[in-house]
Length: 252
Image (cartoon, rainbow, N blue to C red; front, side):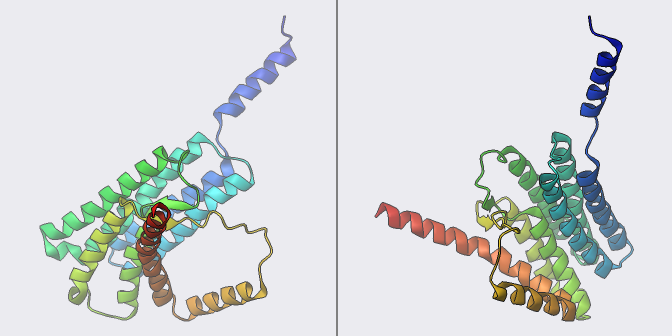
Protein backbone atom coordinates (compact mmCIF):
# COMPACT_ATOMS: atom_id res chain seq x y z
CA UNK A 1 0.00 0.00 0.00
CA UNK A 2 1.51 3.33 -1.08
CA UNK A 3 1.02 6.15 1.43
CA UNK A 4 -0.17 9.67 0.57
CA UNK A 5 3.30 11.30 0.69
CA UNK A 6 4.73 8.72 -1.69
CA UNK A 7 1.88 9.25 -4.13
CA UNK A 8 2.41 13.01 -4.03
CA UNK A 9 6.16 12.60 -4.66
CA UNK A 10 5.49 10.32 -7.63
CA UNK A 11 3.01 12.85 -9.00
CA UNK A 12 5.58 15.64 -8.71
CA UNK A 13 8.19 13.52 -10.48
CA UNK A 14 5.80 12.88 -13.38
CA UNK A 15 5.05 16.58 -13.67
CA UNK A 16 8.77 17.41 -13.58
CA UNK A 17 9.51 14.93 -16.35
CA UNK A 18 6.86 16.54 -18.54
CA UNK A 19 8.42 19.99 -18.13
CA UNK A 20 11.20 21.57 -20.19
CA UNK A 21 14.52 23.09 -19.20
CA UNK A 22 14.31 26.86 -19.13
CA UNK A 23 17.87 28.13 -19.59
CA UNK A 24 18.95 26.54 -22.91
CA UNK A 25 15.50 27.06 -24.42
CA UNK A 26 15.67 30.76 -23.55
CA UNK A 27 18.77 31.03 -25.77
CA UNK A 28 16.96 29.10 -28.52
CA UNK A 29 13.97 31.42 -28.23
CA UNK A 30 16.24 34.45 -28.43
CA UNK A 31 17.86 33.01 -31.58
CA UNK A 32 14.40 32.41 -33.04
CA UNK A 33 13.44 36.01 -32.28
CA UNK A 34 16.62 37.27 -33.97
CA UNK A 35 15.75 35.29 -37.10
CA UNK A 36 12.20 36.63 -37.08
CA UNK A 37 13.53 40.14 -36.53
CA UNK A 38 15.82 39.72 -39.56
CA UNK A 39 12.79 38.83 -41.71
CA UNK A 40 10.85 41.87 -40.47
CA UNK A 41 13.78 44.23 -41.07
CA UNK A 42 14.33 42.77 -44.53
CA UNK A 43 10.68 43.43 -45.40
CA UNK A 44 11.16 47.02 -44.19
CA UNK A 45 14.27 47.40 -46.42
CA UNK A 46 16.59 47.81 -43.41
CA UNK A 47 19.03 45.25 -44.69
CA UNK A 48 21.96 46.17 -42.45
CA UNK A 49 19.87 45.43 -39.34
CA UNK A 50 18.59 42.24 -40.95
CA UNK A 51 22.14 41.00 -41.58
CA UNK A 52 23.22 41.86 -38.03
CA UNK A 53 20.21 39.99 -36.66
CA UNK A 54 21.30 36.84 -38.51
CA UNK A 55 24.74 37.13 -36.92
CA UNK A 56 23.14 37.56 -33.48
CA UNK A 57 21.03 34.45 -34.09
CA UNK A 58 24.18 32.53 -34.99
CA UNK A 59 25.88 33.51 -31.71
CA UNK A 60 22.81 32.59 -29.66
CA UNK A 61 22.47 29.29 -31.50
CA UNK A 62 26.04 28.43 -30.59
CA UNK A 63 25.37 29.23 -26.95
CA UNK A 64 22.22 27.19 -26.37
CA UNK A 65 23.90 23.85 -27.03
CA UNK A 66 26.92 24.71 -24.92
CA UNK A 67 24.74 25.91 -22.06
CA UNK A 68 22.69 22.71 -22.23
CA UNK A 69 25.82 20.55 -22.08
CA UNK A 70 27.44 22.58 -19.31
CA UNK A 71 24.29 22.50 -17.15
CA UNK A 72 23.34 18.92 -18.12
CA UNK A 73 19.96 20.10 -19.40
CA UNK A 74 19.94 18.40 -22.82
CA UNK A 75 16.54 17.10 -23.87
CA UNK A 76 14.74 15.76 -26.93
CA UNK A 77 12.44 18.78 -26.79
CA UNK A 78 15.42 21.15 -26.83
CA UNK A 79 16.95 19.39 -29.83
CA UNK A 80 13.70 19.60 -31.82
CA UNK A 81 13.07 23.21 -30.80
CA UNK A 82 16.61 24.17 -31.77
CA UNK A 83 16.20 22.58 -35.20
CA UNK A 84 12.93 24.43 -35.85
CA UNK A 85 14.46 27.72 -34.71
CA UNK A 86 17.45 27.10 -37.02
CA UNK A 87 15.11 26.66 -39.97
CA UNK A 88 13.67 30.11 -39.34
CA UNK A 89 16.91 31.91 -38.47
CA UNK A 90 19.27 30.23 -40.95
CA UNK A 91 16.87 28.94 -43.59
CA UNK A 92 13.96 31.29 -44.17
CA UNK A 93 15.47 34.54 -42.88
CA UNK A 94 18.63 34.76 -45.09
CA UNK A 95 16.71 33.67 -48.19
CA UNK A 96 13.92 36.21 -47.65
CA UNK A 97 16.38 39.01 -46.85
CA UNK A 98 18.40 38.27 -49.98
CA UNK A 99 15.24 38.03 -52.07
CA UNK A 100 13.91 41.36 -50.83
CA UNK A 101 17.34 42.95 -51.21
CA UNK A 102 18.14 42.16 -54.84
CA UNK A 103 16.75 38.82 -56.08
CA UNK A 104 13.16 40.06 -56.44
CA UNK A 105 14.09 42.05 -59.58
CA UNK A 106 15.46 38.92 -61.25
CA UNK A 107 12.04 37.32 -61.63
CA UNK A 108 11.91 33.53 -61.62
CA UNK A 109 15.68 33.18 -61.32
CA UNK A 110 15.54 35.22 -58.13
CA UNK A 111 12.97 33.19 -56.26
CA UNK A 112 14.45 29.93 -57.55
CA UNK A 113 17.81 30.88 -56.00
CA UNK A 114 16.07 31.73 -52.73
CA UNK A 115 14.22 28.41 -52.80
CA UNK A 116 17.41 26.46 -53.48
CA UNK A 117 18.86 28.03 -50.35
CA UNK A 118 15.77 27.29 -48.21
CA UNK A 119 15.57 23.70 -49.45
CA UNK A 120 19.29 23.25 -48.82
CA UNK A 121 18.90 24.47 -45.25
CA UNK A 122 15.94 22.15 -44.60
CA UNK A 123 17.74 19.13 -46.04
CA UNK A 124 20.93 20.02 -44.16
CA UNK A 125 19.09 20.16 -40.83
CA UNK A 126 17.22 16.93 -41.52
CA UNK A 127 20.44 15.10 -42.41
CA UNK A 128 22.21 16.52 -39.37
CA UNK A 129 19.45 15.29 -37.05
CA UNK A 130 19.43 11.78 -38.51
CA UNK A 131 23.24 11.40 -38.45
CA UNK A 132 23.75 13.05 -35.06
CA UNK A 133 24.54 9.82 -33.20
CA UNK A 134 26.92 8.31 -35.77
CA UNK A 135 28.70 11.32 -37.26
CA UNK A 136 32.29 12.26 -36.41
CA UNK A 137 31.95 15.15 -33.95
CA UNK A 138 35.04 16.87 -35.34
CA UNK A 139 33.52 17.45 -38.78
CA UNK A 140 30.27 18.62 -40.31
CA UNK A 141 29.09 16.98 -43.51
CA UNK A 142 28.17 19.95 -45.66
CA UNK A 143 28.38 23.57 -44.64
CA UNK A 144 26.46 24.13 -41.39
CA UNK A 145 23.35 26.26 -41.84
CA UNK A 146 24.51 29.07 -39.48
CA UNK A 147 27.68 29.52 -41.54
CA UNK A 148 25.73 29.48 -44.81
CA UNK A 149 23.37 32.09 -43.37
CA UNK A 150 26.31 34.21 -42.24
CA UNK A 151 27.81 34.00 -45.73
CA UNK A 152 24.59 35.22 -47.36
CA UNK A 153 23.87 37.87 -44.74
CA UNK A 154 27.51 38.92 -44.73
CA UNK A 155 27.40 39.73 -48.42
CA UNK A 156 24.34 41.92 -47.85
CA UNK A 157 26.09 43.57 -44.91
CA UNK A 158 29.35 44.35 -46.70
CA UNK A 159 27.68 45.72 -49.85
CA UNK A 160 25.43 47.93 -47.72
CA UNK A 161 28.40 49.01 -45.59
CA UNK A 162 30.40 50.15 -48.64
CA UNK A 163 27.31 51.86 -50.13
CA UNK A 164 27.52 49.81 -53.35
CA UNK A 165 24.46 49.66 -55.57
CA UNK A 166 22.99 46.14 -55.14
CA UNK A 167 21.87 46.06 -58.77
CA UNK A 168 25.50 46.01 -59.85
CA UNK A 169 26.23 42.83 -57.87
CA UNK A 170 22.93 40.99 -58.22
CA UNK A 171 24.48 38.09 -60.15
CA UNK A 172 27.14 37.73 -57.48
CA UNK A 173 24.37 37.70 -54.86
CA UNK A 174 22.51 35.06 -56.90
CA UNK A 175 25.64 32.90 -57.14
CA UNK A 176 26.39 33.19 -53.41
CA UNK A 177 22.81 32.24 -52.52
CA UNK A 178 22.84 29.16 -54.76
CA UNK A 179 26.36 28.21 -53.64
CA UNK A 180 25.37 28.40 -49.96
CA UNK A 181 22.30 26.24 -50.59
CA UNK A 182 24.27 23.58 -52.47
CA UNK A 183 27.18 23.65 -50.01
CA UNK A 184 24.82 22.74 -47.18
CA UNK A 185 23.76 19.50 -48.89
CA UNK A 186 27.21 18.62 -50.21
CA UNK A 187 29.50 15.93 -48.78
CA UNK A 188 32.28 18.43 -48.08
CA UNK A 189 33.91 18.24 -44.66
CA UNK A 190 33.83 21.36 -42.49
CA UNK A 191 35.59 21.62 -39.15
CA UNK A 192 33.02 21.74 -36.35
CA UNK A 193 35.19 23.43 -33.65
CA UNK A 194 33.59 21.05 -31.13
CA UNK A 195 36.99 19.57 -30.30
CA UNK A 196 38.17 22.88 -28.85
CA UNK A 197 38.41 22.64 -25.07
CA UNK A 198 37.82 26.07 -23.52
CA UNK A 199 39.03 24.80 -20.13
CA UNK A 200 42.48 23.92 -21.44
CA UNK A 201 45.36 26.37 -21.11
CA UNK A 202 46.55 28.03 -24.33
CA UNK A 203 49.76 29.85 -25.35
CA UNK A 204 49.99 33.57 -24.76
CA UNK A 205 50.02 34.20 -28.52
CA UNK A 206 46.54 32.66 -28.80
CA UNK A 207 45.15 35.32 -26.47
CA UNK A 208 46.98 38.03 -28.39
CA UNK A 209 45.56 36.72 -31.68
CA UNK A 210 42.09 36.83 -30.15
CA UNK A 211 42.65 40.47 -29.20
CA UNK A 212 43.70 41.26 -32.78
CA UNK A 213 40.52 39.64 -34.13
CA UNK A 214 38.34 41.63 -31.73
CA UNK A 215 40.12 44.86 -32.72
CA UNK A 216 39.64 44.08 -36.42
CA UNK A 217 35.95 43.35 -35.84
CA UNK A 218 35.54 46.64 -34.02
CA UNK A 219 37.29 48.53 -36.84
CA UNK A 220 35.60 46.91 -39.85
CA UNK A 221 32.97 44.34 -38.78
CA UNK A 222 31.34 43.84 -42.20
CA UNK A 223 34.63 43.11 -43.98
CA UNK A 224 36.11 40.88 -41.28
CA UNK A 225 32.95 38.81 -40.80
CA UNK A 226 32.37 38.27 -44.51
CA UNK A 227 36.03 37.42 -45.13
CA UNK A 228 35.98 34.95 -42.27
CA UNK A 229 32.95 33.07 -43.57
CA UNK A 230 34.25 33.11 -47.14
CA UNK A 231 37.41 31.46 -45.81
CA UNK A 232 35.32 28.91 -43.90
CA UNK A 233 33.27 28.15 -47.04
CA UNK A 234 36.47 27.52 -49.01
CA UNK A 235 37.92 25.41 -46.19
CA UNK A 236 35.41 22.65 -46.96
CA UNK A 237 36.93 22.14 -50.40
CA UNK A 238 40.48 22.25 -49.04
CA UNK A 239 39.83 19.82 -46.18
CA UNK A 240 37.87 17.40 -48.36
CA UNK A 241 40.61 17.38 -51.02
CA UNK A 242 43.23 16.79 -48.33
CA UNK A 243 41.23 13.86 -46.90
CA UNK A 244 40.82 12.28 -50.33
CA UNK A 245 44.54 12.66 -51.02
CA UNK A 246 45.39 11.17 -47.63
CA UNK A 247 43.10 8.20 -48.23
CA UNK A 248 44.65 7.53 -51.64
CA UNK A 249 48.13 7.72 -50.10
CA UNK A 250 47.18 5.02 -47.59
CA UNK A 251 45.92 2.72 -50.33
CA UNK A 252 49.08 3.17 -52.41
